[in-house]
Image (cartoon, rainbow, N blue to C red; front, side, top):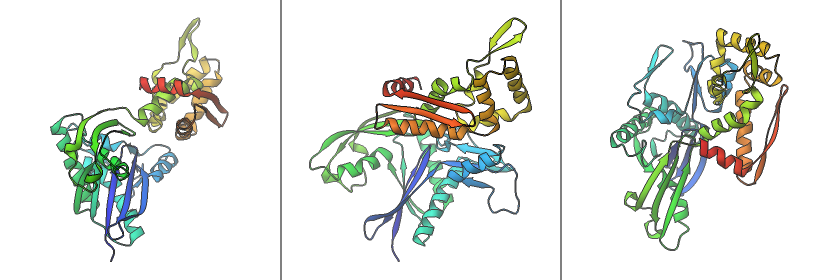
Length: 350
């Protein structure tokens, strides 16, 4: 029987698992899924599972009319001592339980590919889960270790994420170099300045080679939210004015639009009271066409598809100086060109 090892990157936005063949010393295959969990609105006692993970979580969330429990960015709660547990369908879930759901999904998919129950894993972790707070850092790793155990792993080791990112480059070196490694994630952006040495390829302990590190709690998710706030919400009526009383004109509350800057929070609009308020704003605005876009967005659960268009815009700008933010669906028409300089200013605001 072949011997395999799983390398896992549990991320804020996406999580990945690489299947490493220890005999051939080659990567067998790689699995990547969004770090998302959705618990169905209706509990089914006869079902073996009342949740779905990854892309399926998005589909189920939208199909369930956003009434269930959608969980994203679970990695960010690992270091929070204030979070003890949450109750879903009358069952308690702590931080390790939630992370384990994603790790087990990765493990199950990988085990199916190799036809074995692999229980050995190397899991990436930030240099610091929460700045330079040793107590929170210890709590986060303890929770992550427990999550791996719940998922079915027995032989568990950790590696600093910047080190993992630098290994491939180090193999190409012929002499020692000082390198700045950037890890741009969904929730955070981390930087590590370290020494890479071709003579140390394969060494297990590389912590002493890290000369400096730091990070900020800004990543792809916050950039998307900033883009939607600055460039998307005007198309959905952020500047709409309505006649509150005869002769008194006000602008629709900006707080409404904060809830469309993160698509999974759009269930805010499910309440009868807020729906009635929106209908009133629309009527007393003289049926403003841009505000009508907001109603269309809400009633047809289009939030996720809008953010997919934002993602495409970002991807285009990785290789081009300009890109068109384009979204044309159900009478919502957005086609506006943005340049790299504008996007840079947006990232500074996040």
